[in-house]
Image (tube, rainbow, N blue to C red; front, side):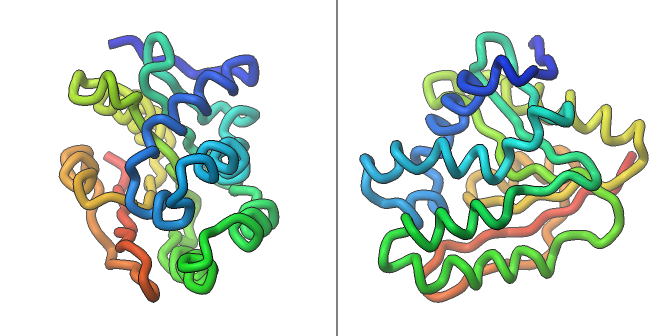
Length: 191
């Protein structure tokens, strides 16, 4: 399965794939449960959370933009100010009280050492189960292993945890605040 590093010209297609992939994600839909709200806000959220991957060689896609992963290299970070502003302004009333505390908990688990961070990975639901996610993960982890640094992510859906385990990630704990679904921070040491 062919995977490649994208360029900024691919940004809209990659973001569209991520939006489709996260349409049923428990954490994302807890924050934006209404379809119109989700469709309107999610492109901005993807850009704030993982958009820096495009400019720093960490945005990958499988053939035809069926799957996409936005990895942030060591020293590259989400646009936290924009992300928090979006959360405060657009999150559902039920999520608004807890979502900032979720982000505070997420920060506690991020490794202090240099690492690659995976804020977003997904496959178009029409193509899930065909190996696109595995191909994306292998492509990124080969590069990360060459750099001999860890990889870190938060699993936002329990059904994805076995997938991450297969690729060498280990759970560090569980983040759950108020009525939020659980997030599971996971770390993979370099091979």
